[in-house]
Image (cartoon, rainbow, N blue to C red; front, side, top):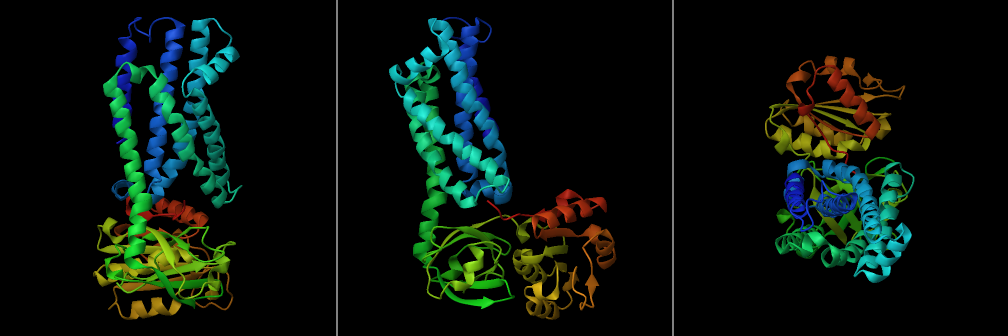
Length: 438
């Protein structure tokens, strides 16, 4: 999708500058080249920003093809290239016009700001965007809280509005080509129609239809609490085992934060269950929630589902709280008749979430579900001990090469297990995982 739009824009840009009234701007004087490539940088920067809005817009028809997790990573990566284009655009354009007019660089900037229509607003928009992009780098390095990054990113919408006017009022590509201008309007309309529907309207429809509320809470382990969510017509809520939701609890101390949590039980048409580990300021307070609190749900999201599995044999590997989507998938796939082997790794027995549930599921599965716990630091544990490595996988699951693998756990554990699986010959396309992060 994005590649085709780049080609279309390049086509319009080439047509405009190769067939320019003053001759081919791409092979002529430096002035023409600076202006031409400066305009291209601006066009690609704006296209990239619109693409970013689609990536983080929870757009279902895009997410189904790539998965929310991969879209989020792509969003982070492409942001840096957009920053380069955003900076290159005004620098090249200003140099080009300063040479053309004979004015100095800063004199030309002054002229742009105060004598060119909508350029000053666009400059303000640029300076609004830059801090949000910088914060993206910091949040990836865990140097600022996600909430700070999230609210800073909302300023992007202001920046886009400020920059929009100058594109059509002073952009020669649009002034000279009404078809290109109309195409540009259509790109904006398409992007914001998807963004508004999937990011806002769809969630409001779900909230009004289902009236999600907390029904009760259950302590699973010392630091894991399950939140049960009920509502109206729950059988119509389109959630699948393995998916996650971005949840906002509408009560004091919680309503200003939204966090992703995966389903920890098979969808049943009666309630949703989110099992949350107290690992931060927000999650440590989950046990303080009360029945009756309204819940706003953005989702469901993700392609970490049974639909992606083609084999009749499955190996599931979970670490810590990563058991939540794995637990629902294990129940679903074993009920579908698949041969499921689950390895669940924890530090000690007290950390095992759903120990009895997993035992019950295995006992009632007619042998289709086998569960093995691997404990790394508990002297009293009499079962499998140590860290999950290729020796354990090869010994516990001799036919691992025939199985599709579903993996979820802390990021370091997932990275280690993926390397281990690769080292023993499991093809990458047989390994399914999502990091459930924003």
